Length: 197
Figure 1 (cartoon, rainbow, N blue to C red):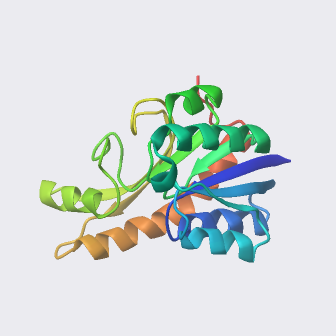
Figure 2: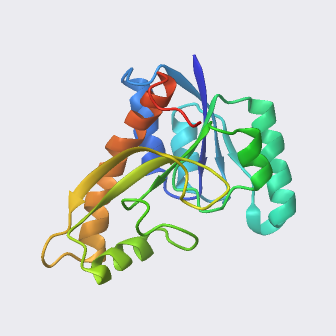
Protein backbone atom coordinates (compact mmCIF):
# COMPACT_ATOMS: atom_id res chain seq x y z
CA UNK A 1 0.00 0.00 0.00
CA UNK A 2 1.25 3.46 -0.90
CA UNK A 3 2.38 5.65 1.98
CA UNK A 4 1.52 9.31 1.50
CA UNK A 5 2.88 12.24 3.46
CA UNK A 6 0.95 15.50 3.06
CA UNK A 7 2.65 18.85 3.68
CA UNK A 8 0.36 21.74 4.60
CA UNK A 9 0.41 25.32 5.86
CA UNK A 10 -3.23 26.28 6.21
CA UNK A 11 -6.86 25.19 6.37
CA UNK A 12 -6.42 21.78 4.78
CA UNK A 13 -9.37 21.57 2.38
CA UNK A 14 -7.12 19.97 -0.23
CA UNK A 15 -5.83 17.58 2.44
CA UNK A 16 -9.48 16.71 3.14
CA UNK A 17 -9.98 15.84 -0.54
CA UNK A 18 -7.03 13.43 -0.31
CA UNK A 19 -8.38 11.94 2.94
CA UNK A 20 -11.77 11.52 1.25
CA UNK A 21 -10.11 9.89 -1.78
CA UNK A 22 -8.49 7.33 0.50
CA UNK A 23 -11.73 6.79 2.41
CA UNK A 24 -13.74 6.28 -0.79
CA UNK A 25 -11.26 3.73 -2.14
CA UNK A 26 -10.12 5.93 -5.05
CA UNK A 27 -6.63 5.83 -3.55
CA UNK A 28 -5.27 2.54 -2.25
CA UNK A 29 -3.03 4.36 0.17
CA UNK A 30 -2.51 5.37 3.76
CA UNK A 31 -1.61 8.85 4.91
CA UNK A 32 1.45 8.23 7.07
CA UNK A 33 1.43 11.79 8.44
CA UNK A 34 0.43 15.38 7.86
CA UNK A 35 3.25 17.86 8.41
CA UNK A 36 2.56 21.59 8.82
CA UNK A 37 4.96 24.52 8.61
CA UNK A 38 2.65 26.40 11.00
CA UNK A 39 1.68 25.43 14.54
CA UNK A 40 -1.90 26.67 14.24
CA UNK A 41 -2.81 25.30 10.79
CA UNK A 42 -6.35 23.92 10.89
CA UNK A 43 -5.16 21.09 8.62
CA UNK A 44 -3.57 19.54 11.72
CA UNK A 45 -7.02 19.29 13.32
CA UNK A 46 -8.38 17.64 10.18
CA UNK A 47 -5.59 15.06 10.39
CA UNK A 48 -6.20 14.37 14.08
CA UNK A 49 -9.94 14.01 13.44
CA UNK A 50 -9.10 11.14 11.06
CA UNK A 51 -6.49 9.60 13.41
CA UNK A 52 -3.63 10.62 11.11
CA UNK A 53 -0.37 11.61 12.82
CA UNK A 54 -0.16 15.43 12.79
CA UNK A 55 3.27 17.02 13.02
CA UNK A 56 3.92 20.76 13.32
CA UNK A 57 7.39 22.07 12.52
CA UNK A 58 7.37 25.78 13.29
CA UNK A 59 9.22 27.56 10.48
CA UNK A 60 9.18 30.90 12.32
CA UNK A 61 10.72 29.47 15.48
CA UNK A 62 13.35 27.31 13.79
CA UNK A 63 14.47 29.41 10.83
CA UNK A 64 15.05 28.12 7.32
CA UNK A 65 18.09 25.87 7.84
CA UNK A 66 16.88 24.15 11.02
CA UNK A 67 13.38 23.80 9.60
CA UNK A 68 14.65 22.10 6.44
CA UNK A 69 16.86 19.79 8.44
CA UNK A 70 13.99 18.78 10.74
CA UNK A 71 11.60 18.29 7.80
CA UNK A 72 14.07 16.02 6.01
CA UNK A 73 14.59 14.06 9.22
CA UNK A 74 10.82 13.55 9.64
CA UNK A 75 10.41 12.46 6.03
CA UNK A 76 13.27 9.97 6.37
CA UNK A 77 11.60 8.58 9.50
CA UNK A 78 8.19 8.31 7.82
CA UNK A 79 9.56 6.83 4.57
CA UNK A 80 6.71 7.95 2.29
CA UNK A 81 6.26 6.66 -1.26
CA UNK A 82 4.79 10.01 -2.26
CA UNK A 83 4.90 13.50 -0.76
CA UNK A 84 1.92 15.73 -1.56
CA UNK A 85 2.19 19.49 -1.11
CA UNK A 86 -1.35 20.67 -0.35
CA UNK A 87 -1.49 24.38 0.36
CA UNK A 88 2.13 24.21 1.51
CA UNK A 89 3.54 27.74 1.38
CA UNK A 90 7.27 27.01 1.64
CA UNK A 91 9.63 26.24 -1.22
CA UNK A 92 11.12 22.82 -0.59
CA UNK A 93 14.85 22.67 0.02
CA UNK A 94 16.81 21.25 -2.91
CA UNK A 95 18.17 18.46 -0.73
CA UNK A 96 14.62 17.22 -0.09
CA UNK A 97 13.64 17.55 -3.76
CA UNK A 98 16.69 15.52 -4.80
CA UNK A 99 16.15 12.87 -2.11
CA UNK A 100 12.56 12.28 -3.27
CA UNK A 101 13.06 12.83 -7.02
CA UNK A 102 9.88 12.04 -8.91
CA UNK A 103 7.95 11.41 -5.70
CA UNK A 104 6.79 14.92 -4.76
CA UNK A 105 3.59 16.46 -6.13
CA UNK A 106 2.26 19.99 -5.91
CA UNK A 107 -1.00 21.64 -6.91
CA UNK A 108 -1.10 25.17 -8.32
CA UNK A 109 -4.22 27.32 -8.79
CA UNK A 110 -3.60 28.21 -12.45
CA UNK A 111 -2.82 26.59 -15.77
CA UNK A 112 0.95 26.32 -15.66
CA UNK A 113 3.27 27.44 -17.14
CA UNK A 114 1.18 30.63 -16.94
CA UNK A 115 0.85 32.47 -13.62
CA UNK A 116 3.39 30.38 -11.73
CA UNK A 117 6.73 30.97 -10.02
CA UNK A 118 7.97 32.45 -6.80
CA UNK A 119 5.41 34.55 -4.95
CA UNK A 120 2.51 33.30 -7.08
CA UNK A 121 0.08 31.65 -4.69
CA UNK A 122 -3.45 32.13 -3.42
CA UNK A 123 -5.29 35.30 -4.38
CA UNK A 124 -2.18 36.71 -6.12
CA UNK A 125 -2.63 34.11 -8.85
CA UNK A 126 -6.31 34.90 -9.42
CA UNK A 127 -5.58 38.65 -9.43
CA UNK A 128 -2.94 38.11 -12.12
CA UNK A 129 -5.32 35.98 -14.20
CA UNK A 130 -8.07 38.61 -14.04
CA UNK A 131 -5.65 41.46 -14.83
CA UNK A 132 -4.37 39.57 -17.87
CA UNK A 133 -7.80 39.29 -19.47
CA UNK A 134 -7.47 35.51 -19.81
CA UNK A 135 -10.72 33.73 -20.61
CA UNK A 136 -9.87 30.57 -18.73
CA UNK A 137 -7.99 29.49 -15.66
CA UNK A 138 -7.88 26.27 -13.67
CA UNK A 139 -5.45 24.18 -11.71
CA UNK A 140 -2.35 22.11 -12.36
CA UNK A 141 -0.93 19.12 -10.49
CA UNK A 142 2.75 18.67 -11.27
CA UNK A 143 5.88 16.92 -10.13
CA UNK A 144 8.13 19.10 -7.98
CA UNK A 145 11.59 20.04 -9.22
CA UNK A 146 14.10 22.53 -7.86
CA UNK A 147 12.60 25.25 -10.06
CA UNK A 148 9.39 26.79 -8.69
CA UNK A 149 6.25 25.53 -10.46
CA UNK A 150 8.15 24.18 -13.46
CA UNK A 151 8.04 20.40 -12.95
CA UNK A 152 6.36 18.06 -15.43
CA UNK A 153 2.58 18.43 -15.51
CA UNK A 154 0.48 15.44 -14.46
CA UNK A 155 -3.03 16.83 -14.78
CA UNK A 156 -4.84 20.11 -15.46
CA UNK A 157 -8.50 21.04 -15.08
CA UNK A 158 -9.74 24.18 -16.82
CA UNK A 159 -12.42 26.54 -15.58
CA UNK A 160 -13.87 29.53 -17.44
CA UNK A 161 -13.18 33.10 -16.42
CA UNK A 162 -16.61 34.75 -16.43
CA UNK A 163 -17.57 38.37 -17.01
CA UNK A 164 -17.78 40.09 -13.64
CA UNK A 165 -15.56 37.54 -11.90
CA UNK A 166 -13.82 38.66 -8.74
CA UNK A 167 -10.74 37.16 -7.15
CA UNK A 168 -13.09 35.38 -4.75
CA UNK A 169 -15.51 33.96 -7.33
CA UNK A 170 -12.75 32.79 -9.66
CA UNK A 171 -10.76 31.40 -6.73
CA UNK A 172 -13.78 29.43 -5.54
CA UNK A 173 -14.27 27.73 -8.93
CA UNK A 174 -10.55 26.97 -9.25
CA UNK A 175 -10.52 25.51 -5.73
CA UNK A 176 -13.42 23.20 -6.57
CA UNK A 177 -11.39 21.97 -9.55
CA UNK A 178 -8.37 21.43 -7.27
CA UNK A 179 -10.37 19.19 -4.94
CA UNK A 180 -11.16 16.89 -7.88
CA UNK A 181 -7.76 17.13 -9.56
CA UNK A 182 -5.39 16.24 -6.72
CA UNK A 183 -6.77 12.81 -5.77
CA UNK A 184 -7.01 11.90 -9.45
CA UNK A 185 -3.39 12.95 -10.09
CA UNK A 186 -2.21 10.93 -7.09
CA UNK A 187 -4.07 7.92 -8.48
CA UNK A 188 -2.36 8.33 -11.88
CA UNK A 189 1.06 8.39 -10.21
CA UNK A 190 0.27 5.42 -7.95
CA UNK A 191 -0.87 3.38 -10.96
CA UNK A 192 2.28 4.25 -12.94
CA UNK A 193 0.31 6.25 -15.53
CA UNK A 194 2.25 9.43 -14.72
CA UNK A 195 6.00 9.34 -14.12
CA UNK A 196 8.79 11.87 -13.95
CA UNK A 197 11.69 10.99 -16.22
